[in-house]
Length: 249
Ligand code: CA
Image (cartoon, rainbow, N blue to C red; front, side):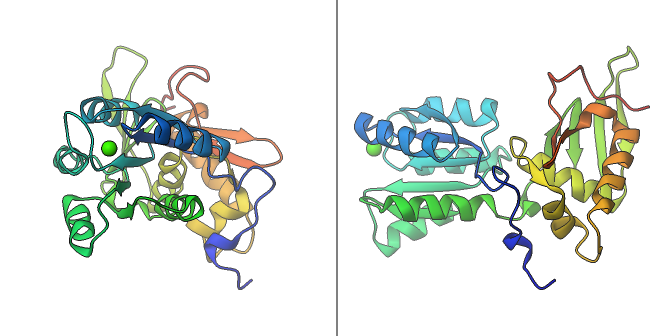
């Protein structure tokens, strides 16, 4: 097969860019328009109108992508990105701004944003840029939440909060187990087709049942609920509320 990793056509629904998106825009009309547009595209939008609320929502709401206006009340959009990056926040950011000179763009990118779009913008371009940000490799994210704990990608471990009184423990994963869990945890709301996971994690494998095998390994180490089977489609990161915490067995 010569198709690239991103070209895999999943079953209906699996390709839809469902992601949690933080929107910070103080212009009420533009904010409403964007909420409608993005919700229509399948995003779960958390909309705030000022920089302070954006800071709070960014740190507590686990968005997968953020769309931040540069000129925000309380905390300016670029200042917001700088503060979030200093706090180790690795969610990709697109800054929207009324200022579109080369220098303004450079300032935005230097502040730690991944992309910068000047107003007025074309909605199709905005949507395409958001999709591109969501395809970004996970290399910058070091830890990701998983049911019952956090995955440390570089150390290849999951720190698990045990349901018993034994406190916090660590489970070591293989490189492939880590890669598979990182893909799922990087887009926790999305259902991945088996074939897509095979392409991303096991590109040399001929058949997508290698994915089933590794899901089995992950469940053996981290508990059944760590990965959710979506029948007829593929897999999704498990949900914390789907039946208690994941637990090593
Ligand atoms: Ca503004």
